[in-house]
Image 1 (cartoon, each protein chain N blue to C red):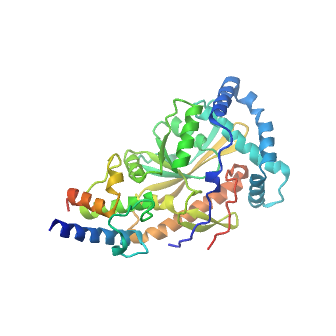
Image 2 (tube, chains in turn orange, green):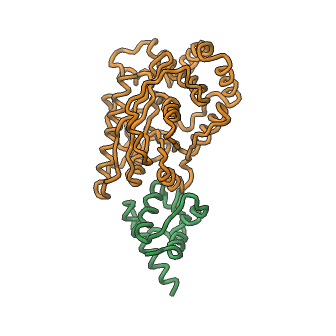
Image 3 (cartoon, rainbow over the protein chains, first blue to last red):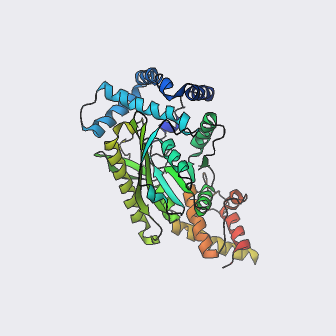
Length: 302
Length: 90
């Protein structure tokens, strides 16, 4: 397997989240109290503020959109991109509190989840994870545990509890050495284990892939884990289509259940390039849903 | 006698680790008392998973996610081997 010393992709992990928990609680309260239509108006000044005050995010948004849209990028495109991000964050207040009625969901590939065995669901920072999770909850059989890096796990747990003190979303932090044994136990119980497989904060092995016509480096870790545990892998994304509409997509990504040890490296490579292909496809289909506001396509450092 | 057995097991386990993780060091370069996870040998949790799967197959033992001792078991090659010696069925 090709090993690349990884470039420093940790800038996103160390950038402190803007905002704070009391503010989050207040905004959630307003959203629930005054309803989605009324509070959505506030998203415009918020979007404008972040657009004007974050030159680096603006820059990476522009260079991403140029490739996803295949044309010159205008200010209105940048605004749409930032507004789409703000909308999905706003909608979390409802989705995490199980208020699904303001929304229309179209669901594709749901039958892939009905295998009744533990599997991996690999997503990306593309669209809304909460929208996927809402579909999973309505489809009562699906239990999802999210796997993420420890620092994120703590932050997200706090945020979830601020939005809904009864939140029961299980999160497995990667900080412990037995995190993987926990993952294995959950899979045996028939859980789906969710991973956002497009980022790594550490110095992990990564593979070069082609997304939107340029080379990006993707971490091999999530797929190595799925291969070792011999599980099927489903791709997931919850694309925000504007208004109150979301399109949830599940796609077959890989199945490691019968892969022999000597075929493993190749199977992992194949899965990662298929994952990259799916990212490419959905970035083109719903360009404003890409929420990696940093230089994702940084040059691989040798 | 016990010590001899332990050091034979240590050699064997170190060799298994080097092979299953494609480590760029030889088995005898793994210090018996250095931490395996994180700072010492620099393994991540997926490496630990791979080792524990290999070890359970080779020695017929179960490592459990709710086992509070995992931190201690994987503390070093020596402690890992002590655990294997005590719980192996093969």
